[in-house]
Amino acid sequence: MSASSNSFQKLPQSPDVLGELLHSLSQPLTSLRCSLELSIGEVAEPQQDCVAVALEQTEKVIGMIQLMREYLDSQQPVPESFSCALAPVIRSVIDELSSIALVRGVQLRLVGTCSATIPVPESRLRLALQYLVAAVIEAQSVGGRVILLLGEGPAGAVLRGEGEPSFREPFGPTTSLLRVKLAIASRVVENAGASLVFGDLGPGGFVLRVPRPVA
Amino acid sequence: MRIGLGFTPTQTKPMRILIVEDDAALASFIRKGLEAEHHAVDVAGEGNQGRAMAMEVDYDLVVLDLNLPVLDGLSVLKSLRQRKANLPVIILSARSRIEDRVQCLDSGADDYLVKPFSYLELSARARALLRRSHLPSESVLTVRDLCLDRVERKVKRAGRHIELTTKEFALLEYLMRNAGRRLTRAMIIEHVWNLTFDSTTNVVDVYINYLRRKVDDGFSPSLIHTVRGVGYQMSPEGASA
Image (cartoon, rainbow over all chains, first blue to last red; front, side, top):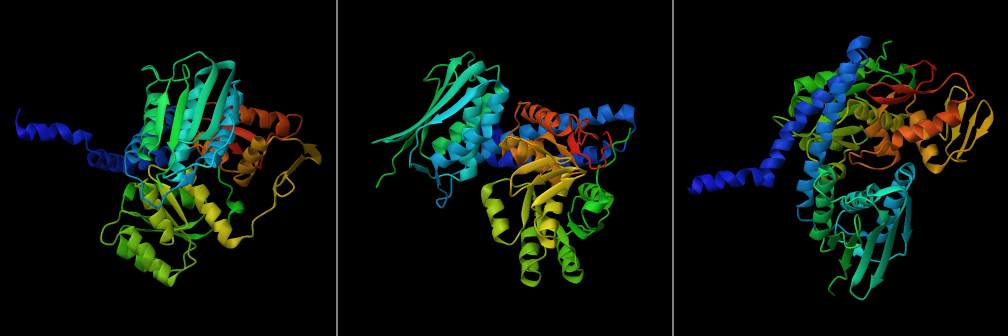
């Protein structure tokens, strides 16, 4: 294989190329979305369903673009100035997701606390934790429980997510978007020097370890 | 029945708005939407022209794209801030990274919307900015006979006290603050639940149902309406949507 074909094969994996494509896609998609939103009330009743379906499908594509952006962003190095405390963010995520758990008939509870900070922008950590906790909730059947145990030891802080009883493996290939979200979560925490292990506590479980910073 | 744009012109005083956007199609859609809200709208297709117009005319709001020909949006923003420190500016950008957002806000932008944004979201942010710069914050929101006291955390309809959970209260407040406007499920989940991801949850629909039972059942007219293909709308007119 020639050197030129080798470099060609590398192009699609380059974050810069993907970033540029996403950037270019976002412009026509904005026009498309705005035009559909503005026209849905302007067209006659029989056509409204068609516009509604077009808008729904456009929003799905936009959702995937958002995920691709998050994936690319999660691979970027974090500027040194960013840092946030783990405990308040996980508490806030639990608060945000508790009503979603309730609607699914799942109990969601956080036990413990810690003083650990992670060198990552708060919004990125929030996103990673939302994806993790949402995955554990999704793995529960009605009447299930999700317990998040937050603690601190000599090696650092640990957040364990565990479902009882878990009925579904959320990391399997059938739930591709969930896998992408978990890949993003994993990249975010690993980029910040933490580690994430899935499935340690049975299906849907995870263990997030935040090491103590070296003095 | 025609849903219409779902805007209530009396809710926001008509403003003069400048759009600086080089994509003609997008600029025309934004213009169309804002004009339907009875605002006077001008459009500039490149940065220098946008800066000149913003300097010469007393606009109430500038909607500024970052990626502009001739002079980029960030330079326009910095230049504007030297002469018009209080002019509200919303940045439109395809750059979603936190660092880009921080740089724009640090340079004086009042808000930042990432493409592909929703027109309804842009409209809501514009209203919020205009409200902030022209009106004091309301502590009591009223839609017909429904009153929500943001300070006392109390809700009444036709004088009858209504008990709401924290999330129901937040949802009702968001609907009332945007009464007469269509809100997508994505907007609701982002603003009320603070979730930005594409979730498969039906939590918005479930909570809208909870609210309807408490706020609309037994009262007339119904205030919370489903807007087919879009989401929900609190209608002060009580008309079905």
